[in-house]
Amino acid sequence: MRMTKMEDIKKKSDAELVEFAQAARKAVQGERFKDTFSRKPSVIHTSKKDTARALTELSMRRRNNETK
Image (tube, rainbow, N blue to C red; front, side, top):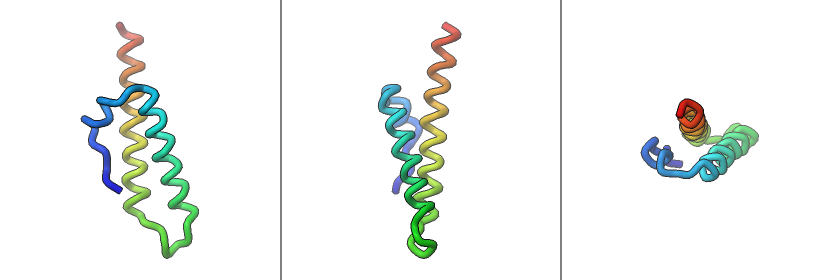
């Protein structure tokens, strides 16, 4: 799984970001509950980073809308 760049995340709408964050969370959960030998730590790592990026962008947008 390839990590998503912040530039790509900024182009998405709020609804797309929410779906993206949910999908990344499901990927983390799915990998964690796999058998120890079939887990891929890189998938967990990139999914967690993608979730954080999406949630950061959402909170920045909400904060900017409140200050305007």
